[in-house]
Image (cartoon, rainbow, N blue to C red; front, top):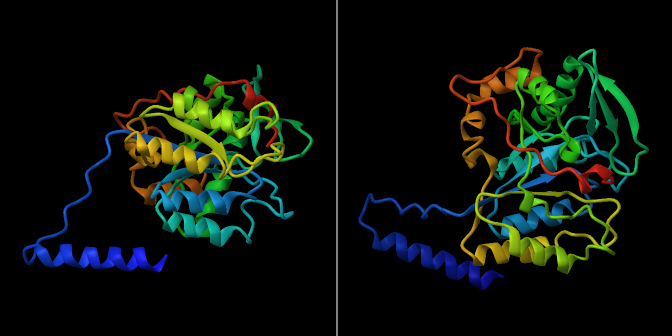
Length: 303
């Protein structure tokens, strides 16, 4: 491992000496075929392996955070994981809310409230009812915790658990400053499907055939019910295969649908996340959210 590093360092030295004095090194050519990797929290058993794979491919991703049970008996946003999230933030990834209790929408109620199925990991699902204000708090709690853990504000984006939303729910979320992020139809990577019916080689083959530039891809930081872990078994050859086709891996702040939203002044975003003051929709920005992810496999809520 040391020899390539030395060779690379020497190569960079030669390039630097060959340039005219005062000239800066040319910026790398921008990739015109980006795909957007996103990961929802899970049991975290494979989380370090996933992040190590991303690092080796110089891939930036977006992580959606909920307070979920972990394989070590803790929770995804507890003090044990706080340094890990801080390290990820320093590496330049993006972060959004996945609700605090992993509440998946199931119905709009006549009185303006919403019914959810609350479940994460192997927890028994509960039916809960929340007002728009209570749902707003569900979105803000991960943002506040992220700020505590990392010292950095979370972007005001969210992914609804199971990708399940309604127009009324999206309007309630946007009224308190959050914009929804779904995933592309071909970006459903299938890591939460049963491995006996959907083995890793089949999932890899399908993704390599279907994923195209501009897609938002969705996977998890560990799925309780999958016996043959998807990551990094599928993730590494998937990134290699997409890279060989000229694609690169970008965070959502570079996505054309989210670039304006996510580049708002971060001080205002952090203040809004820590308070009850709505952020609202910036002037000139469409209020139409991205298409939510497909229903179906996500409905199982088996994380």
